[in-house]
Amino acid sequence: MAQMLVVDDEKFAVDGICECNDWSMLGIDVVHTANHADAARVILKEHRIDILICDIEMPDEDGLSLVRWVKEHSPHTESLFLTCHSEFTYAKQAINLGSFDYLLKPIDGEELVHAVSLMLQAVKEKEESIQHHAQYHRYVELWRKQQPLLAERFWQDLLSRRLLSFGDFLERGLQDAQIELAADGRVMPVLISIEEWQKTLDARDQEIMEYAVKKAADEMFLSEYAGEVITDRSGVLFVMVYTAGASRPANGWVEIGRRFIEVCRDYFYCQVTCYIGKFVSLQEVSGLCEGLKNRERHNVKEPQSVILYVPQGTGGAEQLSVPDKINVPEWSSYMLNRERDKVIALIHRSVDKLEARKIHQNQLETYYHDTLQVVYSFMHVKGISPSQVPNFPLWASAQIRSLFQYRHWAENMISTVMDVAFSAVESDGVVQKSIQYMKEKVEEDISREDVAAHVHLNPAYLSRLFKKQTGQNLIDYLIETKMTRARQLLDSKGMTVSAIAQQVGYSNFSHFTKMFKKQYGVNPQEYRNVTKRLD
Image (cartoon, rainbow, N blue to C red):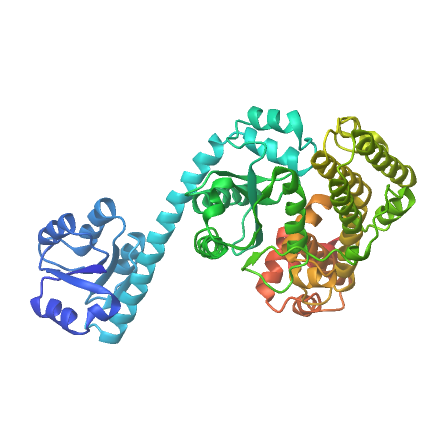
């Protein structure tokens, strides 16, 4: 609740202001009064005054002098001057002092109430600005001090399959990263997708706010359980919750996700969606994280929501037969047709069959070498060299001593080479299709969401993919494309500037002018005038 102070040497004027309105209805719970400047100063020292209504002409000291003192000793206070004179000199001094308004006596009650309402809004906005500024600088300091974490590097290497996920490799990796998690521990990943920024931010401020989102995710998802918040090598934010969190039911994680979405919207100016995974072994984490990213990729109908991960079907893999040994041409064919799920299903079914038979080590070695043959055959057809595959020598020479190791070795090996073969090509195709769409629709009012819908992808996913492939933000490219077309139309001299704005999809002329000037350094009319002179 706010407090107001009315200062006037005429008692009836003070009483009139106090009684002209029920000030509590505006959120003012206390109205203080004073008949001279000294009494006002005492009140200002003892109370936090939000609104000051002050007469200019007072016998002992004028209101202008009092407000100068207030600006120094109570800078948060908004001031409103009252006077019987309408001379410009008074108005000029009031403006120079930064007063909120300047009203002539006798005061109209409705006019005063309207002015005080606006002042209260200004007080609120000022407080919010101060709080945001303080919070912003707190995160700036944390961001400056933040050093690359060993734990983040570990997860980046594990998720990108640069780290072998079994045996001594995994144990050493956990120890080197100082992660208090056993090699047979379990982890639940939560993907945090920043879908849209609600406020225009430059690159540095966006990086800081992304860091703030990351810290908030740490505080909310890991307040009771061990874990890490990391960004993988493709720029996706993950919360990795360690085994101890398994005691929390799924709806508990959903509730945290909902609260996190509200915090991001209210404090960090962004819309996010949370994709909640499940607890799996370290060997299964990379596959699950890919599943979460795939769910994000195709989420075009559920923004700002919490989504529980549900494994996708295997596309008829349950019908696949499993012979006594690997059918190399068949496995290679599935890989070439991008049917990763079928190959993974065959690996799992093969392991299940072999476990039931209690196989010997030489049979396991046969499966190992046949799997390598599948991989080499695929790489040969796709023209992939071993140097293109992360840590290929380590994967290819790994010592497999159990079916458990074989299952995860084969799954990761095949996924890694398929990523190298298809990810860049697929990404490039999507980006080129998006660029072509923006060029074709340059004279329509299209948005980032429209571009994403055209390629059937989640807008956040597409934006991240576009930035990775081109080094430029998708929305910036869209604006640049429109401004290039606007410049071409300006050069033609056959249309008015306002008509050109409409032509390239801008119903708001001032926004069009702002975007054009940002792109070319001059507004559209100035650009046209310059080209005329050059002609």
